Image 1 (cartoon, helix red, strand yellow):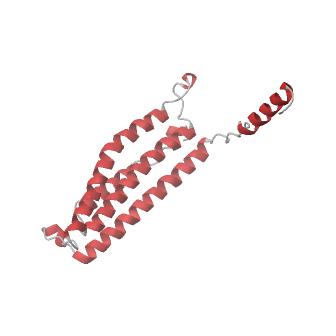
Image 2 (spheres, helix red, strand yellow):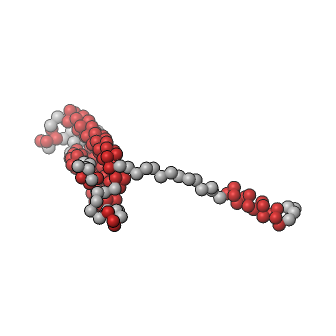
Image 3 (spheres, helix red, strand yellow):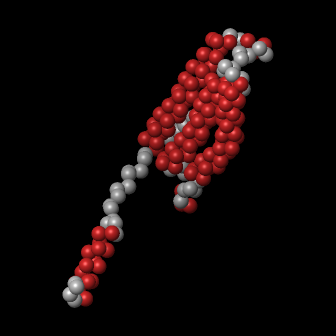
Length: 186
């Protein structure tokens, strides 16, 4: 039908070339300088802090305006209904579990990113890309935890305990800011 063995071999090679992907040359991005990494880290940290801080002020402001300081006297505002209280409490519980479980895990991950240095760089600063990855993971976990707690507080219709969980997460986020010395900058 096809003729000779050479024709069959030709057909096989053509089909094989059509199905195997051709290698794509990918350029690796240029490595970050310490100054660029510090600038990116500063912007990332500030963005995380602003997002979590605005959420905290907005949700807590709305709840406190609605209820006043009644929650401090133990007469917190009533949730809209029992199911919203249950869902809000569940969200706060998820936020606590998120922070309690992922907090330590992300700190170990950050340490892993920071100490993956070649042996010849013993006491030198952290590589800029590794620094940025490690710190961004910490900031991300804290921001998501704060936002989950705030969503739970808003759904529940009460300041406590969601507001406290979010406040602690935002305070820790504020303390874990970029460090120039880790990148070898003065």
